[in-house]
Length: 350
Image 1 (cartoon, rainbow, N blue to C red):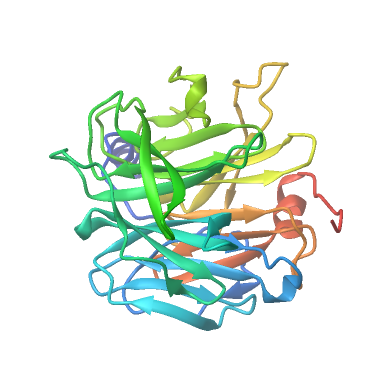
Image 2: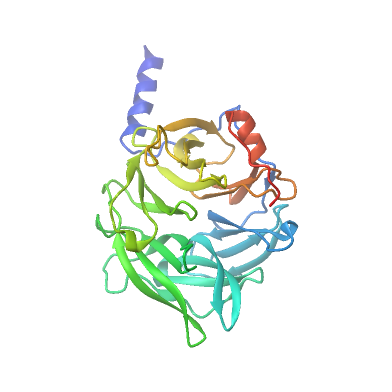
């Protein structure tokens, strides 16, 4: 009877939102690479694919504390670049092909919470572009956290979607058009959107660029889905995963096939697992995302994650990267994930 009571107490605590830390599953997937440690607290990774030499691709990750910054890791987990001394950087995403000064530049876009700005760094050199651009101007609730980049296929217009520490339902997220103005980066607000349960906060935002959708984690509530293109309006297309997580749901990323199918991976933070959903939906409904499987990983209470189906040296069929609270990022071979869960692998070398 004592064991039953203890088990019920743990389940109840998780269900009511208490962040109960659980030990790693002994059968958890093991990473192929663990990065060198950052100074404070890893939070969110992005994968930058080198345009001509995949061996030079980078993992870009944030160190989320005042005085922290942005780190570049090689595919062996070694720190090869960094920009530190930032005012609490949070999340990062990659904008490919930003037009600036007559050139096309790949840019890491980072939220800096204490300055209420987005900061921009060229890749692979990690050189800052400008002095940052303010977000949520005129609002009492600012403190930017989540960020995701959307590039519209029809005209290559680049947008950034930004979330904050707290905000009102219906306009929790703001979306900006990124462009060049007189040789500098500039932004223009294009829409405010995003339902919010009010239960905790919204941090992780991810854009499925090819399919044209944006997803975000409403922690302790579920995953919201909208059109990524602001001209398509603010209709919520799906709200799923409400009963699939122990407490917080966090990092979102996609494993993509060219035909629009694939997988959505979402962190079940307190269980040290990732839940996997069909990218294309189910039963002919592109917005019906039901749980396929849940896998234990060796990450500790993972916030941010990123996935690519592009084969990289040491990672045939793709790479999955997730942060861990031991100040590292962990790299996993997609082939190992697919083998453990009976999932497909994209093996094309293009």
